[in-house]
Length: 129
Image (tube, rainbow, N blue to C red; front, side, top):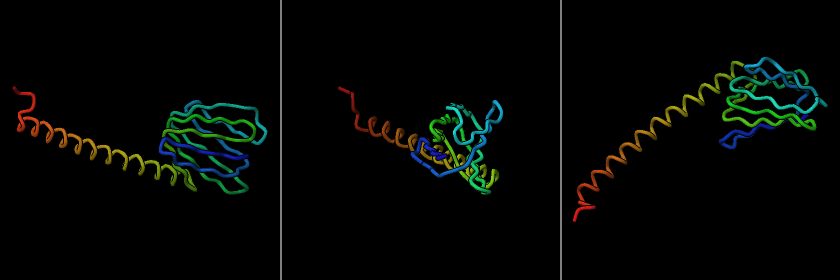
């Protein structure tokens, strides 16, 4: 079976696997080749991807997983992959931390730009007759 991952940033992963185990709030679901079509929602959880004896893990936040015609499609707000669950979780946590720091910086930059704009409007006496 083929698995494909797409996140809001357009980040994608794709590979061939034997089976997956999906861990979500509702429990675990295993999917093998030729499984019946299924859709699973994940608020926060992980997917264990197995090929031969190799395992990798995909930590997912706010995702929808569809399996149909031996293609597992994962659409997620955020997702990070790793060779172990701990590595995938660490990569996920780092990515979330970086995004939070960037958001804080953007908010401060926006605040300063807005302040400068107000000062310049006042100095130019725009809107006064």
